[in-house]
Image 1 (tube, rainbow, N blue to C red):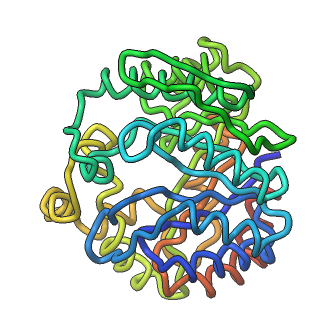
Image 2 (image 1 turned 30 degrees about the horizontal axis):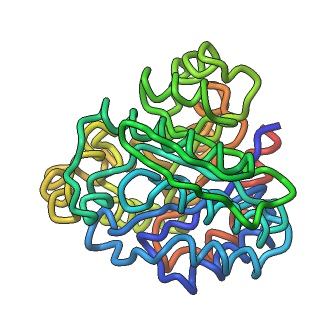
Length: 321
């Protein structure tokens, strides 16, 4: 059966609200949760971007059963992979074995702050591959010395290792990342319901491993209000990952989406209170073979209403259909 999760979107809510929201998601019956790891919001209208790892630590203590996962962390520029391994191992201990480490090649939006420039996609995937190797070796235990093209590690060791090894997921968007995930990851992550991504993942060694997708939604009893909110905060979503990965900050995303109409956003994302629309627009992920689907409820002020509706209407409908 497909599992349905809740997204703590750091770009749209304050850190303390995100912790309260994931508590509500646990009470509402969501099967798992994920959190974005950003330095900046996509658009100024979102207005937030707290430190995901502090929020995760608080969430681990504030919840009891709901699994937690980064969706996703870039372990190459803002963070050295050895530090990411330490953070992930610590989270696995704090959460009692409920944590998974989702990794990706990153976006210029967040990584340019390190002042190292923004590499081409092929180089970013090389860096990600090395980073996963470093993290995996540290998860194995013992001293690790590593000499790579992009990273060096000198006698590193994780002194606090969890009893349950942290599963590693890799975000995919095309052939190169799908092959990398199939070869090195325990699960596949994607935001597009493309069957071919899973096929390439399987061909590279991912057969039988979980696939986790994500879709943004905008619940509101008033559909027009939902469409307006989705357009104000999520119109960047339709640009495509090749564009999203390279733009430098909120002003660039605002410029790139200047002529995106509310109707275009509403065509892509489920908006309003019609459960059938949500089932219809989420179904492509199920059809493409995704085992888990994380929902992003757009709008910090819309979370409480969404939780009640999701518990009593949306989640039962998704699970029954």
